[in-house]
Length: 226
Image (cartoon, rainbow, N blue to C red; front, side):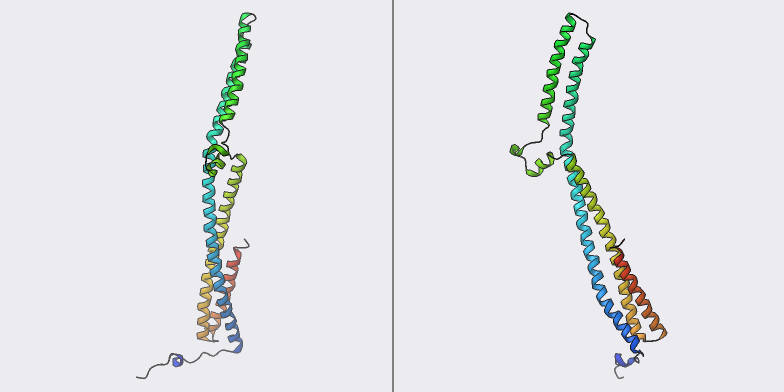
């Protein structure tokens, strides 16, 4: 039994020059489109991971700032509340006393209460101040303790922006992956069209490949538009 030559086992399918030119153009476009879509999918996947990392770090920074500044702010508020209570107590004694010795005694207590109020406020302000550069704390801890509401709002905005970026890159990555699958289907259809030639089945395969390529390009580009 003589060996079978694969190239001559089946007769070559007839193709007109127009069909060959169209097939060659689509094959070239597919060969260019698949690497581009692969890069789009891989690059957006990388950007999505980086955005998630930035979002996670931002959430950690927000937690650290809240954990370090809340006790200090709470202590300052408690000191202010205590000082106001002491001052109000002295004023109430004066308001409830009668004239004479009791009023003189109440005024003396009110003056002492006012001095105590000022001392409590000053002590609260001093004890709630952020540590200075000579405190011996590491720079990250000192920065966290010295942060305020404005810095916290900025961190929240940056963290939200990172999560939004991750969602946008994720959408582009998914659409690039779908487009890559369509381009692979188009390549298979082009191979089928080359085998069948300019027959009804070959023309159908070529048209289907053209539609798949158009949809693949639109799918890949839609992530950058919508």
